[in-house]
Image 1: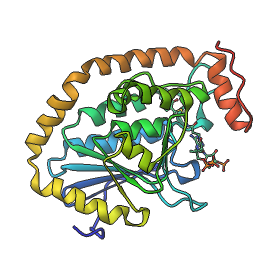
Image 2: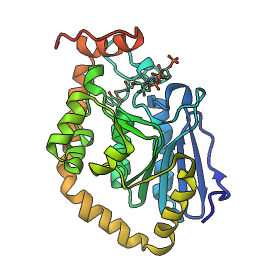
Image 3: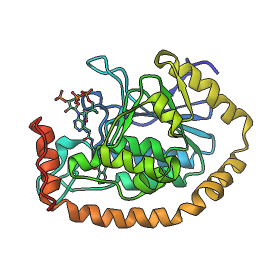
Length: 279
Ligand code: 1HA
């Protein structure tokens, strides 16, 4: 397959670009001015695109990536939740309609449960909720400039569902705790060594190299077999994680009322070190 596939744009979206070509769907988060951070509106669009790809019998593989390169030449897959629209009251992340939503957890569940192979293409930063998104995907292909990490606790936030438990099953308990507690950043080679990514390609060859990799999946793999493998081998043991995710959702809604949550966004906006009080 050539990288110059004739991508057909599907639908009109503000924050994402959704395209299809030759059995592949491609979803691009298109908010480069915020390192492709997502709002509830972005996530609503992602849910729509992923829902369409799930239901389209011609689609076998879905690629998720961030728009690149950015205004300053840097790259980002996704920097997580948009800190600039985190409400200052009890609501957490607020969409344009003023209603707070945690719909990224719905997106996580959709990606895990859909009977299609979902591949994260990570160039640059996969940080916070953006890191969780690539963890949730079935495969991750990284550019050699990729940077991975969680930041939640530094922002008075967390992901107590798939983002914690699934990650721990992927990289092991000690490493997962280090990732969440210390909030360090890891390069592509470190991510490969801990089992976070499947392949690394040079950034300027990411698209072309990925297409060859994906072509094999689209042309030579039975979609039916793949769907059953995804459900039984990988997801069946994770039913409890889905329940954990639901509980984490409740905890998160509670924590929106905390001082720490407000301080998490305040220090980021004011570019200073945080002063958390644990309340
Ligand atoms: O906590 C949750 C959730 C909780 C409950 C349920 C669901 C959740 C879902 C998600 C999340 C989270 O994701 S929490 C964590 C949210 N993410 C962050 O706090 C990351 C913040 N960003 C950074 O640490 C850095 O920007 C970076 C390591 C990704 C890149 O650094 P760099 O290259 O130095 O760029 P920087 O200058 O910081 O950023 C470029 C522009 O993008 C800045 O805008 P500017 O000041 O030029 O106008 C910056 O503010 C903006 N930006 C970057 N990340 C975000 C962002 N704006 C809003 N939200 C962001 N996440």
